[in-house]
Amino acid sequence: TENSTNRTHIMTHHDSFEFLKANLSRFDGNGPVKKKDPGTTRDMRLGKYPWQIESKRGHSFPVVLNPGETLPASMRQWVSHRCESLLNLALMHGAVLLRDFPIRSPEDFADVSEALGLESMDMGCSAAPRKNVVRDVVFTSNEAPPSEPIPFHHEMAQCAVAPHYVLFYCETPAARGGETPILLSEDVADFVTDRNPSFALDLQRYGVRYRRLMPEETDASSALGRSWKSTLGVLTQAEAEAKLREPDSGFSHWTWRSGGTLETITDAMPGIAKDPRTGRSLFFNSIIAAYTGWVDCRNKPKESVILGDPEGTPMDDAIMCDVAAFMATRRVCFPWQTGDILLIDNRVAMHSRESFLPPRRTLASLWGGRRNRHFSDHQRGGEGGACFVEANLRGDGDDGTTSLNETDMEEEMEEEISLQMRLPPPPSVSMSTDSGATIGGPVLRLHTGDGMPAVGLGLWKVR
Image 1 (tube, rainbow, N blue to C red):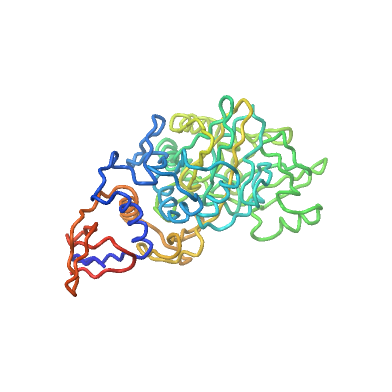
Image 2 (cartoon, rainbow, N blue to C red):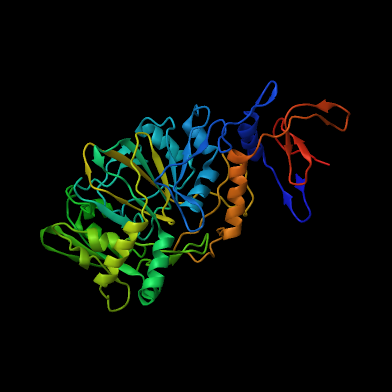
């Protein structure tokens, strides 16, 4: 334990283990090893690339992690031991790019995705045609034609339940194009609020409804060509109607059209919403993607989204174009490299897809919230580290989940990064125990100035 004036900090078994892993590697038999880069540990370093930007909160977007002095022997174990840090980095920065790590196959990608300790996600509502690649964990990303770009959106924001996290894996970069641009949702919400305050108020008050016509059989030529059979998990029209009548289906109206096509209108979904973890306003929707990109032989994009007010007010074309133009100025677009994994907090960042020249193979993995994490702000422990509970974006915070304010989040991340990446080499000195024995080797320096021998795991009493 460490006792300061008004604070007690507990270093758990996992903290000690991670701290030792990050710091004992800096020692050889003759004492501390001089580090070449203060942002590097034995197995991880912060990457810097010209296409990264700095957010208005001073955070790099996205944050990039590269291997350190040695490659991890097991990426599943490496991620499992850092799940809390990686997810908190995604919350703080919006997205985390893992580059140059030993991730060589879709199976490796599945291992990394599962190691984050997240709830599984039902992707039935997704409009994108997808194919299962690895054990219902890894899927093809949207298989829209290469010539068709996919506009910015929050994944499945048109659904009753959207994923908390989206991961992409680059197995084969495109011959040309094919990037996955990302964008901070908070920036768009602020732009809309400042530029069109009445429209922002309508989005907050009424939300939006999405209109979509689904074919009876999946149309692979369309970015939204998934059939109603696949979307609803049914085989007949009668089964589809029964599914649509369920209270939590997310649909308010439906009509059968010629050729077995099903027209649906969703419940009112978020337009601008508060993230309960941070209190920030987010442009949590897919209205630009729907208004500019939901087009095929069945769907007309400008009819694909309306306000959630009783009148079903159409979107203002000038405002839609204005928002889309702003998105283009604030996006981050980087070239994929084979083996890249991009972890996106789906409530913080939006994503899109550029058109491309084949071949290109980018896989996706969608996940819900952190699994069984009922801890207070600074409690941690357990195998691989415990993760914070996260409230659903549409929740009101009364479900027992933990919300992080800005100060809590900053303190948590400062602690996590310092434990794993930024601590200077601790001094190598001798300490005496109560029995008079002398302990040599590295000593951890605490906030109080006291020393703690960096030997073994567990709790140490410091006087």
